[in-house]
Length: 285
Image 1 (cartoon, rainbow, N blue to C red):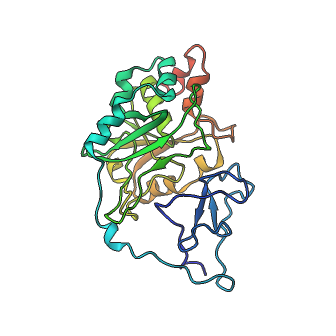
Image 2 (cartoon, rainbow, N blue to C red):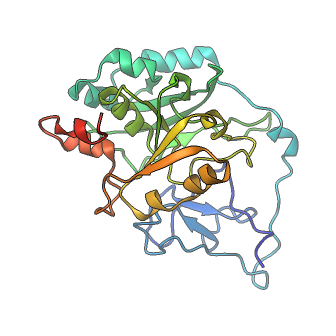
């Protein structure tokens, strides 16, 4: 019944009408700004609990499909001068918080963590060493993200599109690969567990499989030994990322360290909460 309706990609998200959080509501194509139709990203914490609100053909006009096929064929890249200007800023709250954990400036630089004033910038570099995108967010001195500000990457323009790769894929070697959701988590975990390669896919459903030609994140995992590191919530344990690993026959296992939790707790939270570094046994190194 609803095959004709697709959720928007590469457009700003709106305020959820159910939990009132800004930047969490994904609209259907042709209904941008109309929060009657869409889904909230906060599956575990929104009253809607992941329910999709489909447009009703009898009540609303036909959706308008954007004619941007030509734009999608042209991938855009970051300006190297802009990248270097971002990377010159190394004193945001996120930097300071990482330093408080003992993480070095060199480590953050290797991971392409920069800044734009008080905002933290994560530069995405693919395995071909091309700078393809950046995400900008805000953190406080305790390393908590300011969710009211949001977390923004570069999207479509009239000249083409900006893709997203796995954050950290430019650092991948021949080690076992741990996939986490958050860029913050990948950066922190990789410092304390350098025995493995760490990458972030951006969200529980962020491991795209190439069906969207702007964000093929799974190809670099082929031939690798992969571990999906669950966040401690429903979305972390049952999502399209795991199904895409299955679909593409990636050699993967699932590690659920926090199976008794349902609040999104992850390995970075455990590292931060640990007082005597006893967390090093979590992965049985």
